[in-house]
Image (cartoon, rainbow, N blue to C red; front, side, top):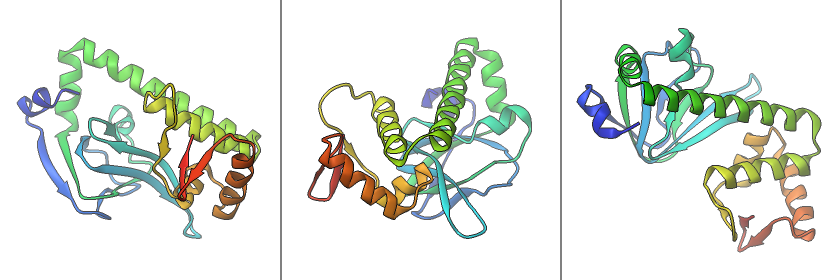
Amino acid sequence: MDVDLLISWGATYKKYSKGEFVFYEGDEALFYFQVDQGQIKMTNINDMGREYVQGNFTAGQSFGEPPLFINERYPASAMAVEDTTVLRIRKETFLNILDEYPNIQKTFLALLARKVYSKASTAKAVMNHTPEERLLSFLDDYKKKHHTTGGKIEIPFTRQEIANFTGLRVETVIRTLSVMRTKKQVEIINRKLYI
């Protein structure tokens, strides 16, 4: 959403240090959040301490908005991956903006539809595909989200982070990427992953 519009409606900037939480899973959803600079990740951690990353959000991207529409609590925690500045505006004001500007409301409807579609695709990949197919699905999705249609793109995640995104063990990710490298599906140059 346009930063000037948010500020004119009373949005404020809030800084978060690397590793600091914006909100925790189960917290009441009170604000609309949009990354101004830095990076936020939304995660779930199971009882055994295993992390599943729901998404990474960078400058200009909003996060945590679905519960605002249905009066639910946050289904995941949001944490700053690096020192990050976030714009936030109260839920009621955010909903008033959407009422006031139908074109913005349509944009958010499309955004939410893309998120639901992506989650459904991810769930299908996790349930039905081999580790190689899961990784290809994740990497292709990353490439599409970053509007890169040609040439190589560096994947900025560690092997552990990729495991957290795909629900695989890190050892499986390492082994599978090695096989994919042999098949020329990915490139690994100086320990960096490219697709």
